[in-house]
Length: 523
Image 1: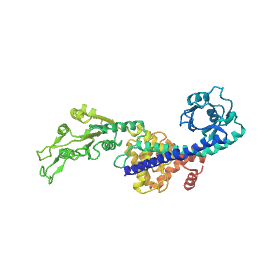
Image 2: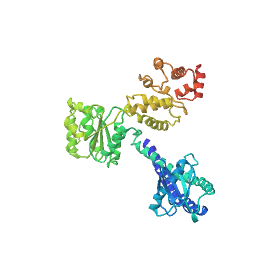
Image 3: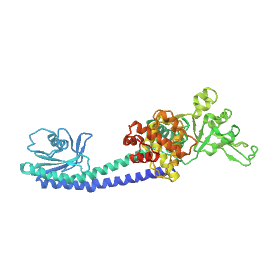
């Protein structure tokens, strides 16, 4: 199931993050910091000086901060990139020597006043990353003993030491980056919520993030919820999500499609019946209210509930009790009701097709799910998620979507919303040979014949669109005809430049050459 796959991945990332945290703490505090401390302790002896400090660079904040230093705590000193000697070494990328500092004003004097030290002379070398990250740190040695001055020999030695320090610092920073990436991926998975079943909830768009936030808020309290949205937007998925976040998680989630139940069976469906209650009642049956006791009753297409049933339904909801057909025994229940419809329920109330008192009883909180066309940021993540699920379901490997397919998907209006997108991905996987890329040619006629401009990634001009409509020819011949038109159109627009044409089509030059040769196309 999709949830199991995502949960396993999420758990793996959590475990990885935990291990990285342990490694991070171990390396930086026990090993790497010990090694940095060793440099801080040894360098004053090597350069015949009093103190040493190693600073890390924060380019965004335009500061360098003390990582470790003689008799100083981490971050006890934060120096600006502009106006300090260590900042100059970092900004200019050079080893800086300053002697006779005591009478001079500057950042060193301010630091001396705060720490109680006295700075007479100073040498500072930048530490350049060996993996292309620029200057990541600086090493600073202070106060040549016996009133001496730092010289060229000291510069040469400290510059060499800085090269070895770069390896230590690169490892510290890379480890921190890995940990940061792990956290970001974990946060990304948390945004891509999922529920029981196969359909994930993608929340990259602000609109869907707002929907999920509202769903999380109402899940904690047993209020009735009304979920509104077009067909295929995922109303039941959001409803299940609310249930699974609620305290009633271990209770039943009972879905009922009000539009699919014949009016004469509606009462027995919701309230149940006893044996012999009517002709054909050869045994007793639990009603939906009983079945959902303690949990959630999901009423899909609530606007289609017959008007004759609504008073009985309202009473059951108000009293929290009902009796089965053929019995006088009252059965109590406690359920949260989540209702959904794609109709304008207020218009149904105004027209008299839906009772106003039932409306106010059922719809405490409204959640409107936006159609897919209003949240294009979710299209690509959804398509990729569906692709992963479908390939696993079909036990078939493919090489992903061609770039122009994703552009096509994002420009299409998706009248069938998420459900249509999922069906389209299933179709494409089914029609694409194993290990090959999913191309526009495997899309349904509904998508290929869409009238929006440039829908196929500029692959087919409007003049050729009629030639791309499905015919009675074998599928392989229709695909060849469509690919031929795509290739000719791209070559025409690039004036025969095969490299640009391939790029325009989102394929490799080799693949283009192969198809041109196979179809007898000349530039």
